[in-house]
Image (tube, rainbow, N blue to C red):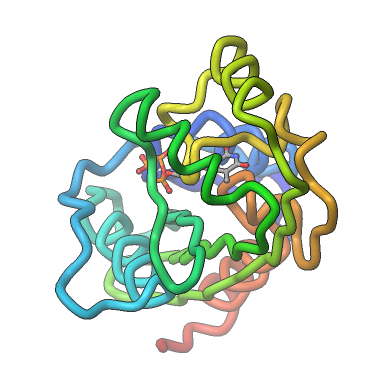
Length: 193
Ligand SMILES: Cc1cn([C@H]2C[C@H](O)[C@@H](COP(=O)(O)OP(=O)(O)OP(=O)(O)O)O2)c(=O)[nH]c1=O
C-alpha cells in the first residue's frame, strides 16, 4: 500500500534515509535546520516530540507530499544526551552510560500539508561495564560526533549492549513500524492529531 510512495525526509541522517528506503519508500532528502536547544523544564520526551514536529514544519513541501521528520535523544536519569560537541564530551557520555540503563527516545512526525501525525517511541538499553581504555579504542575507530549519546548501536557499540527492550531501529534514529503507521493514517484517513 505504501510501497514506492514518494515522501520527503526532513533529516540529514543517512540512517533514517536507509531505513525508509529499505521499507520501500521513494525518499527525497530535504534536511531542516532548526535550533535544537531544549527549553527550560522540558522532559526528554517533550524535547524529541517538539523537535520532530518543528523539523517537519520547517521543511518546505508540496501539500500532497508527506514530510517525515524525527529527533532522537538518549536519556539517562531523566537527563538528555544529544550529539557530543567533541571527543572529551563523547568519552564523558560513554563513561556515564557504562554499567547503567538508559532510554532512547525518538519523536517522529509526519506532516501532509497542514495536517500532522506524531508518535513517540522509546527503547530501553542496558550497557555493560566499559573500561576507560575500551572507550578510548571505540572512539578512535568510530564516528560518534553525529550520534546521540556518543554511540552507534549499528556499529562497534553493539558489543556494549547487555540488554535491549523495544525497537532497535528506534535507537538508530527512526522507528519504522511506527513511522509507517502514522504515514498510513495521515495518507488514508485524513484525521488530524
Ligand atoms: C543512540 C544512537 C543514535 N544514532 C543517531 C540517530 C540520529 O541520526 C542521531 C541523533 O541526532 P538527531 O538530532 O535526532 O538527528 P540528526 O542530527 O542526525 O539529523 P536531523 O537533525 O537532520 O534529523 O544519532 C545512531 O545512529 N545510532 C545510535 O545507536
